Amino acid sequence: MSHRHHFRVGPVGFRVASDWAGPIADLKRLYADYPTLEGCAATATARIEAARPWRRWVRPAVHIGGDYTIPDALPLPLSQGLLAAEMAMNLQVALGWRQHLLLHASAVERDGRAIIMVGASGSGKSTLAAMLGEGDWRLLGDEFAMLGLDDEQLSPFPRLISLKNESIAAMVACVPPERLGPIITGTPKGIIRHLVPRADAIARMDERATPALLLFPTFGGEAGLRPVPPSEAFMRLTDSSTNYVALGEPGFAALTRLVRDVPAVAIGYASSDQGVAAVEALWAELEA
Amino acid sequence: MPATPPLWLAPHADRLSIFTLDTLTAVYDRASGQTHILAQPLPEILAALRDSGANAQAIADRLSATFDIADSGDLHARIAECLNELAALGLVERA
Image 1 (tube, rainbow over the protein chains, first blue to last red):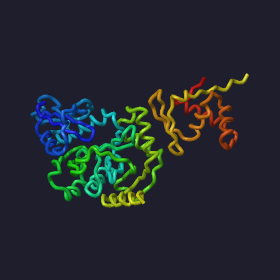
Image 2 (image 1 turned 45 degrees about the vertical axis):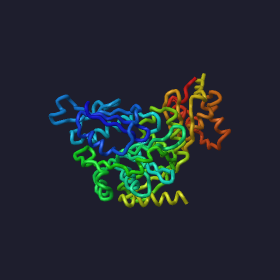
Image 3 (image 1 turned 90 degrees about the horizontal axis):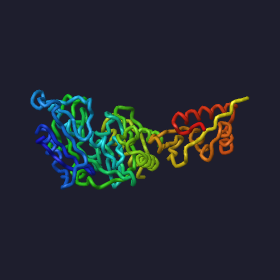
Image 4 (image 1 turned 180 degrees about the horizontal axis):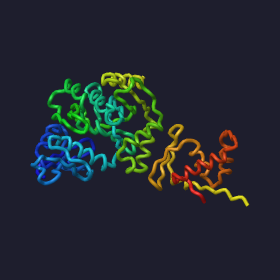
């Protein structure tokens, strides 16, 4: 493969290779401010390659490859090449990473303390994190919260934020165009547009944070909040982790410590602004 | 002659990591790598078996000595049911 890029996001060194120039050009532009691997080996290798050799040219179809693959995954059209690259990178981390407990969650930080937001796709966790990350918060990550196995610290993993459908317009209005990726239409999740995290999130990607609040947001639900008992938080977090089973006992120990030490709350909200206000109110209460 | 009630054994203490979450308890089984979430009284039964094997009646006696348990006559049957649940999880076995 002739097109390549490598860069580091938090603890993960990525090496991405592609059969086509386009997706790599997008990655180079959007990850321009991220550190290089500085001569170190990559910890995750992702490839996007032609589904069949001739599909490099004829109705180009992108297949996700790397150390880990999903054999039955349908190829994506080349117009979704950046999405394929991001998915390939996600997959390598989701299935291969063992240095932290990975929670499928977004996370933000203020004064060294972090909110971990856990929810299924569509819960609004990405949009909430993106909006908070444009305000008084530092974005730690949009896709994975990386919890230390020994020290209960969260390592930032500030990848591109994947904005979807309605949340795109709200963010486009408040960030400069150079922080936005191409508009990708017709994906299984609708329209997707990537957002580069704010400069402080990238510059401080090695600065860890202490989890202070576990939040389970539900977008579109009735407004309100409900304390979540540790047992429910534990079960929901094991469900949302991609490597809990693989980690064995260290994962169990890290997760039980987290739910023991950090309060958990479920919130419902009807609009993103309402969600942000609810998070700020909760945080103020926590600090009081 | 009545059948001898089965004797139940718990795993060696080193095998399990037990963490009380709230009314539920998380148990990590080092032998299988599985995590189990147990509701009361399963953790208490597991604890009652920790030092030596016992049959359901002996477990009922041990629990009654520690907890204020209302026995409406079916305590023995309830404990036998719980032991079967624990056995299905691989956390106790018949001697």
